[in-house]
Structures are given as structure tokens and as C-alpha cells.
Amino acid sequence: MAHVIIIPYPAQGHVIPMMELGQRLVDQGVRVTFVNTEINHKLVTSTWTEKYKELMHMVSIPDGLDAWEDRSDLGALTESILKTMPGKLEELIEMVNEGAHKVTCVIADGCAAWAVRVAKKIGTKRAIFWPASVASLAPALSIRKLTDEGIIDSKGPLLASNRLADQAGHFWQEDFTCLKWLDQFPVCSVIYIAFGSFTIFDQKQFEELAFGLELSGKPFLWVVRPGMTKETTTNYPDGYMERVGSRGRIVSWAPQQKVLAHPSVACFMSHCGWNSTLEGVTNGVPFLCWPYISDQFSNKTYICDIWKNGVGFERDEAGLITRGEIKSKLENVLGDKTFKAKAMDLKERIISDVEEGGSSHKNLNIFIDWIQDKDTNA
Image 1: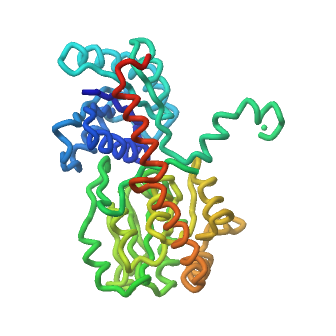
Image 2: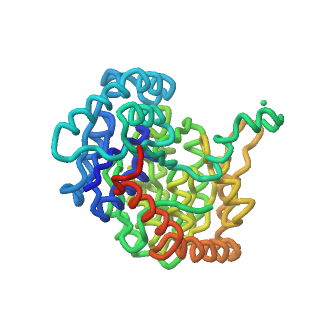
């Protein structure tokens, strides 16, 4: 039996798609050892149902930082990882290889290339998994060419199918009670707002968003995770909860794929991370784009300018997205049926590619055959 080591970069948007890959491999009879950092291992296993426990083994290695150190400082985290984790991974693989199920392949996150070097050193097969869009990978692979030419100073996604919509790898417990709350609203009437695991707002911007949702007059489901604002505690405008009443529901984390598949959800206000982009697209939900970092800006470009299934926000002179701008763009997306039509058309095209018989499914099977082929050189 093939035995794969999977190593994500220690961030929510990287762990979830690699957990999905791991589960797909287990479904095909591949043994998986999933390696998180010690901190993330505790978070992930606290929310994991262990459905795949027999063939998927969850383990951890240290990232080199002390427990009290700030892991939102990505520079310090990455530097510590490069110093600590390669050696620890090598030790882990050596320990595993002493048992009955030797490692046959290492699958590393595209942002954890150090793990590929470890795999090469020990002489095992290795592969890189890119958890973002291919549009963000292409320029990354062409940086030298793009620089030389003075330009700079898609197919194959993996996601939980709509048939199951069960994801693993969440850092926070999902609040499933919001699904019953959604049941009380008509079709395409609720605004869903979620900004992933990294986006941080200052208090002024957070309040403008809150007021914008209030002014819309529409029901909304808003994910406000721990640490979403720069302040120690999240402070809503005075009297806010009383004014929005039962038409506003705020949760710390949501079962997003199930929420987006719910018929009452009309649109998705999102940071446009690749996981969220795929989940919104495959459920035919129009977007209101609010990118924060990295490939989220290129994903917004696809949504607004190429697929045309959503709109972005404009900032004022102070760099703020105002309550008026939020209300206006919500009215635009909810009032123009073109956005929903574009979203549904895109959904049909994507689903035909991802489901069994599509190119994504075929590519995954080709990869599994390569993992299991003992005659293939590392």
C-alpha cells in the first residue's frame, strides 16, 4: 500500500485543501500521514471528526517558535520553519520507515518547498500541491522572465463536492446552528459575509461594515472570527445588536460550503481567498469582493472582470470602504439578475469538470497511479 506524507503551510487556507487531497487519497486506498505544526495540530484535531482515522494519521512537528510567540508575524514564522522543520520532518520520516508502512511519496505545499528537498535527500517520490489558483502560480513560475522583460519592478481544483460538502482542517469549531437560522428566509435573500482566517480590520473599518449591513435592510449571516479586529475584543456600534435584531446572525465560524449551498443565500461578501472563491463559484453565488492579501487580488480580477459574477468595492480618500459604498454595491448585486445568471452558468461549467468523468477527476487518478507505481523513480 502506498504511504504519503502531506505537509501544508501552517495557515487555514492551506490546510483545508490539503486535507481534502488527503481524504481523496484515502478514498482510493492510499495511507496518509498528515503533518501539521504542533499549534495547528491541536486546532485541527479539536474540530476533526476522524472519519478517515484508519488510513489518515494526524501528526505534528514543532515550528520552532515558543507557544506564546505571535504566529501572525509571517516573516518570523517562515524563518523559524526553515530553521526547524526540515530536520524534524526528516526525523519523522526515518521513524515511520522503521515500521511496516514505509513512506512512498511526500506531497508538500507550494509554500513549503523545503519539504521537497527533504524528500529528495532521502530518495522518495515528491510532489508539490498548489493550494491557490493556477493564475497565481503561473506568474510565480515566471518571475525571472517577467522581470527580464520589464513587466514587473484553469483547470484542476480540489474541493469538497456539493454531494457531501464536508471539509476537514478547520482551526475553529463550525457553528451549524446558522443553517437552521437560514431556513426561515426566502430563496436568495440573505447576505453571507466571511473574510477567511487572515483578514484583520481596524475598528473604524469594522464599524463601517457593520453599518453598511444594517443600512442594506437585508438579512445577513456574518462570520466574525476571534482576532478579526486589531482590538483585543470585537466592539460593535452602540445598540447594533438590538437594531439588526433577528435579521442579523453573527457566528465565529461557519460551515461555509453548506452555507453557500443553502437556497436562501443571495450573495457572498468575501476576501476572495482561493478556497472561498471555489466554494462560491461551485454554488452559483455572486460575489462582493474585498481582498486583503496575496492572490486574493488576482482572484477578484477574475470575478469582476473575466467571469463577471461579482463586483468590488471602491475606497474613499482615506482608504476606507464606507457604509454608503457597501450599501450601494449590495443593492447593485442583489438588484441585477445578470450577476446570478453569470454565477449559475459558471457553476455548471465548473461542476462538469470536477465531478467523476471530468478532467480534474482523471488527473487525480493519474497522480494516484504514479504514487502507487513502485517502478517509477523518485
